[in-house]
Length: 315
Image (cartoon, rainbow, N blue to C red; front, side, top):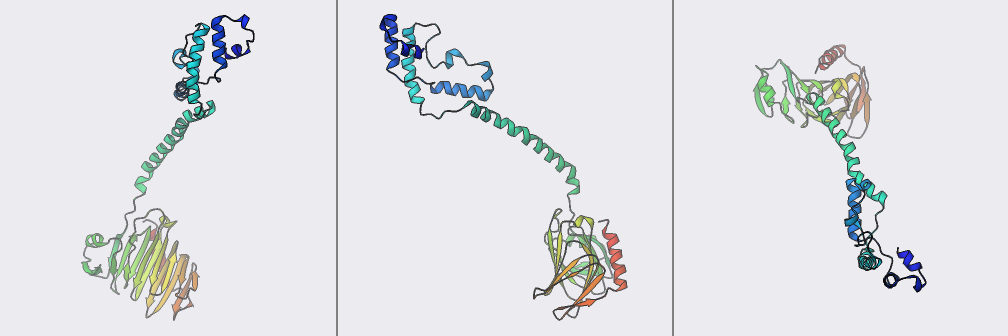
């Protein structure tokens, strides 16, 4: 209608009311939708009711009823023009932007809810298998008592030893005795004549870099079970350090010399000067005077390691 009034050039074609309406329209800018109309349009997109149409009485930017005289329309246009100019500075929002804003929360929920449900199901299914019992005493042979964290513990029954066998504890085994302990990320170990400090985090099921300290002259035999995959174990023996990601081996120390025998897997030995030696399956090495020397595996040691490996499979 505004365009029609602008285009009319001859005053004789218009009545008095039409002339006043034309002059009012020519004296103002092109009206725009007011802020209330924009807010209702946005709400319609968000609620999904845009297809149903807007309420003509509440959403019209010109406050005049349909079919009103031209003069009434002109007055309403003048009133709406002020509101339109006030809202002109507000950033315009396109229909595509409104749709994307309205649908984004539903899109996120569409994917988040199934993923969260799947994660809950996986935790429920695998929770029984994710418990690592930590350290467990398996047997004690040749000793009436051992020392745990500086205190004597009788070996008549295993329960007192199990109660004292805590993460980070230090066990001292007599030279003529053997203590077998399971745990520490699926590892079975025989300790004989050594002071052995267990890792302070033996309960890790997935991943883990375990570390223990071995003191004194004696023997440590270790066999990693299938559950050890993805983990590593380091043994510190004075200045030497041994590390493995899965193997069956023996470490024996006597008088400053360290003998290493590997039945399966690999064991890396590192000296203080930074030199390393990778000991593979069926081979051995001796550390003497700060240097590596070749060593052959003893047949008796091979049999002891095979026996330890067979027991480690079931832990």
